[in-house]
Length: 304
Image (cartoon, rainbow, N blue to C red; front, top):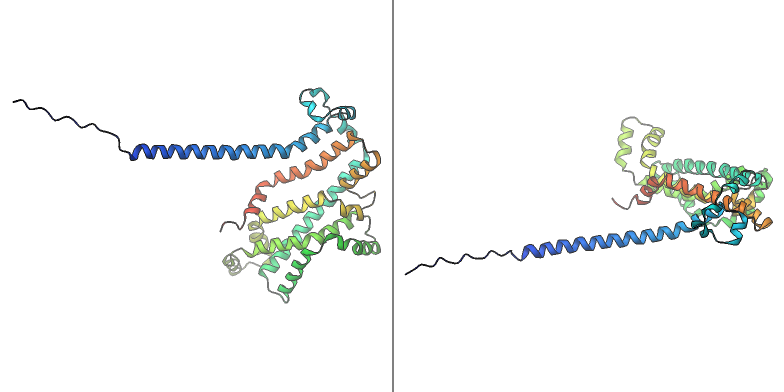
């Protein structure tokens, strides 16, 4: 009688392994497709937003005849149309160059004054005790709802009596006055989120209010201050309403000068295109220079 050896059982992989593998691969595929779709969408949106800027830049490099005869996109197949002659003409246009420096002289001091005054006032409203603090802050908040148009005529009359009408300091003072309520409100709320223990520890170490403000509060509040500076600079740089009323021919900024030249000449695209691009590219450069601080300021407070 022969003994038959038992057949060796066939080892089969368990069901959990392949299923888990398939789920992992499926999740990776879905994540990859999701990320790819999001990135593709962001690329499309970026191209849509950058197309006007690219078109303006290419138009500024073309002659008036080329701009009148065809669109800027023809430079993609005929790059010989491009030259910097328009920018040479722009530098020779005294009205444009004077308006550009007027814009700098209006935007930079306004931004600095608003940020400095708002930082001091925001710290005072957040951490200093003085009579009527809450009522004064409520008044500042109430000023946020006052439209700029309401103050144009009264302030223009007052500036005329003070000799500030039609001057750069007059335009700067108007922008500072109407920029402070929002700036104080923003920085006060940001400074109020600083842990009280940090300030009390600094006071226990003998720190004065000024030293606490400069050495502790300002470094901590740098993202919010940078965000405020960007907003204020962009608003003043692109403003035309206030400058159109309060600035004269010798102090008007670039926006008013470009509008004036459009009204006078209408079709001088060889001057207007580079001037408009110059007016646009400066805020873009400022934004990207402070982009990191801007993002930190926008995200501040969203995650505790």
